[in-house]
Amino acid sequence: MTDANTTVLHRGLSFGESPRWHEGRLWFSDFYRHAVYSLAADGTDERLELEVAGQPSGLDWRRDGDLLCVSMTDHQLLRVNQAGVTTYCDISEHCGFWANDLVVSSSDIAYVGNFGFDLDTMLAEVGVAGMLASPPPTTNLVVLDAHGEVLQLVDEMAFPNGAVITPDGTTLIIGETMAFRLSAFDINPDGTLSNRRIWAQLDFVATDGMCLDADGQIWVANAITNQCLRVREGGEITATLTTSQTAFACMLGGDDRRTLYVMTAPSSNRFEIASERLGTIEIARVATPGVGRP
View 1 (cartoon, rainbow, N blue to C red):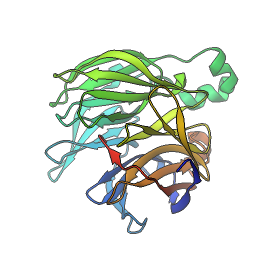
View 2: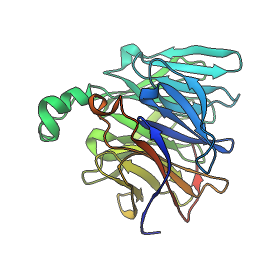
View 3: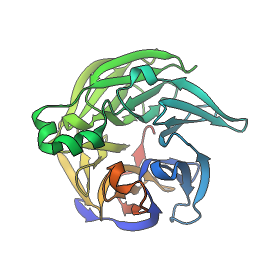
View 4: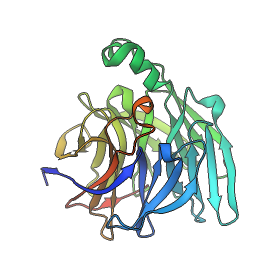
C-alpha cells in the first residue's frame, strides 16, 4: 500500500487514544467518557474495562498481566489487576501539565510522557503561528522501574507522546509532537535511556500515537491533519493513509497484526469536543504486520 483511505469501524467516542491490541481485542482509552474500553476485531462488542475519573490515556501490560494505565489530570500511573486498582506511581512533580502516553518494556520498565504545558489554552491565546514562533516549554520523559519508582528523567522533551520499543528491546522511539520529529534512544540493561538522536525529522507532522511494523518502519498519526504516515528511519514517507477526521493514534492489530486501527476525532481541543461523541475508530489493511511494543 502506498496511498489509501480508511473505513470507519466504530463510532461514538469522545476522544480515543492509546489503541492497543491485547488478547484478541482492541483496547483504547476514551478521555471524556473517562474510561478504558475494548472491542472485538470487527468493531462490535464494546466493553467497559476500567473507569478512570482522572481521564485515561496510555495503556500497556506488565509481564504478570497487570495493566498500567495513565490517569492524566492527577498525574497518576494506575496498576490494575483482579484485586482492584492501585496507584503505581505519582509523577506530578515531573509533569508540566497532564500525564499522557506510555509504553512498557518486556522487563516492566515504563516510559511515561506528559504534555509539558496546557496545549488547548495556549492555542486559544496565541494560535499555531504563535506557538511556532515561540516554542512552548519542554518537559520530562519519566522512566519508572519495575516497582514503580522513578529511575530516570529525560529532560528537554518537546511534548513526548506515542512511543514504541523494537522487538529486540534495545531501542525506544518516541514522538516529540511539538518538534515534528521521532527521537530514538538506546535502552540500557537497567532500563535507562542513552544515546538520544533524531530517528526522523518530519515536515509539519505533529507526531502522535504510533506503532512499529516488521520492516522497521513506523506508522504515526499526524495530529494536525487527517493522515497516518508510514515512515522509514531518516524521514522518508513510504505510505500515506487518509482518514475521515484528524488522526491521533494508530495500532497494528487483528490476528495477523495487519489491520491498522486509527483513532480519529474532529479536534483534540477539550473546550470543543469534551461533551461531543464524534470520535471514531477507522481501519485499513496493510501488507506488513506489527511488531515490538506496545
